[in-house]
Length: 182
Image (tube, rainbow, N blue to C red; front, top):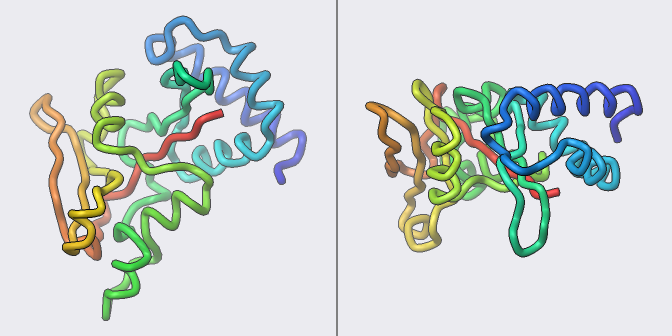
C-alpha cells in the first residue's frame, strides 16, 4: 500500500506526463482518469511500480467495450529496471548457469501488468518512436513457446521489427513493456 503522499506525488507525475503527451490519448480528460485511479488504489500501486522501474506510464487510449483507461510504458527505451530478464519462469528454471535475476512474465505479474502483445507493441509505435536502442519481450504465442522460443520487438531504420530468440536468453538491452487497464 502506498502512502497518501506517495499517491499524490504519483498522480502529479502522471498528470504532467498526460498533459505533455496529449497526442497519445486524444479525447480523454485527466479528471476522468484521476477519478478512476482514485477509485482503484491497487491500479495506482501498479502504476507506481511501472514508474519506479523506469516505464514512464502514460494513457494510450480507452477500451471501447469496457471504457477502461489503458496505460502503457512509454519510456523511450525499454524500462531500465526491467532489463536482463529471460522470457518466463520455465526458461529461467531450465537455464543451468549464468541465470538472470528473473523473467519478464514473472516481473510483469509481480507489478500487476500484462506484457504487450506484438499487435499492442506495434500500436504503441504509432504513438511515438520507442526502443531505438533496446528491445522488449512481447507475449509469445503458445505454439512458439512450446518449441523453446519467445518473441521480442524493437524499432530500427524507422521500422518495427519482430524477432525470435530462445526464451532463456537475456541481454542488458532487452526488457519488457507492460500495460494496465483501469
